[in-house]
Length: 455
Image (cartoon, rainbow, N blue to C red):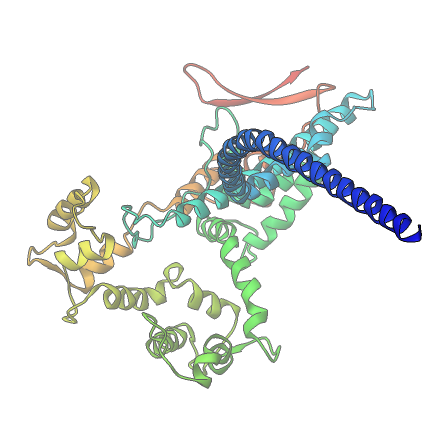
């Protein structure tokens, strides 16, 4: 009985195992079928996704390229407009806006007029600063272009005009003010009261009268006007003086100048490309000795001015001539021929057509520069070219001022005559429209007259 029961149990167990195997097999088949279906579905969707990704990838690359181009353009604009941003800051500065648009708080016509003048001057100053900045910006752009200039090199030292203003005394004396005082001082006087302006003019008259005889001659006026016009030169000398006067004794010795200028070359004497520092130092020493009148190898401020600006001093004319010939005379014969003359001004590029001004210079050389028609310029001909005897603006203005103020027609001016005609020499602050205003007019047949008009 036991054996039969055991056999039945084994049979049941085997059936259970077979049923479990069948169930597992069915589950596996169903699982495989499900996986195959999913793969098929995924395959279709995957292909679509891949296509979309490819499209997106192409579009993304295009977008990236566009962004890079925009960034490059923005970067260039930023670099090119750095200076223009600074200019914009000038025009939008609080000082500029207040000068032009700030409220006027006073009802007094005198104060209103003075306030308006101050505001207009501030606006003009800002405009001048902006103009200077723009000129610097433009010059930087020109240098950045790396284009070879076709403008000629200017070696002729012309006398500069005394003012850029129009000289028309029937309208105003602004030209005479700038000629007599210089541009900056003339602007300062415009903000002074008439009393203060006359007081300062009296002090200036004492400085002009060099021999202290109580009279101002045409020659003394001419010297004064030239000094006023050359103030920028003396300002330039003053800025460099402290750099070279290393021991602060009031003089600059040749050794001081040489050590400051050529110190690095003296420590390691090596030539740097096109610059021959040895020759440059010899050339500077020769000019220094020419400017040093007492030959002690020490120069004061006047002598140092002659060293830095030799073209402004008659005793330095020979050194200017010698340096010019050395620069242009390539064959070393001591003369300047036509080829050397043109070559100093113009270096043509391949295939470039010669500008009209070069053709004009060839004609100028043949007709006016080479006076003896030997095909070259000697020392005198070169001197006449670079330092011509031009119209003397200072002398003409001195004669004009004497003519305007000389009441007794003795050819010279007293202090009283100058102060009587102070409006010719210096300006002053406008009084507004509360009294009499001096007006200068010319009749159709008569001379210039002064009168007072009530406003």
